[in-house]
Image (spheres, rainbow, N blue to C red):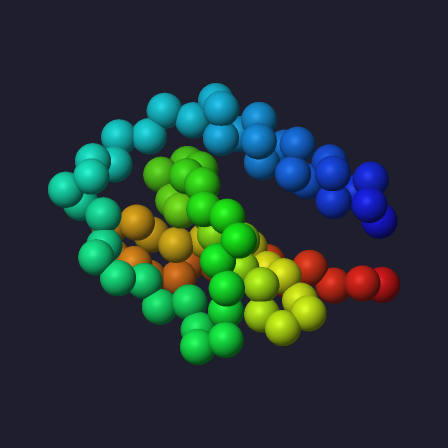
Length: 81
């Protein structure tokens, strides 16, 4: 499981470094709602979207956000199996 998570983060890191986004600072949303109990661990930009690693209690999730509107596009929860 740890190796799987490392592979996911390696792929994300690769995509971040290969990204050439054209979102300007003037177009970024002023506020983004992530949840009352959520704690932001990391933020990065990928394919023109913000990818936010959040911690909610004992669980963590990746939240994909449109940087212009601040709207949540998708969410990936990390679960133990």
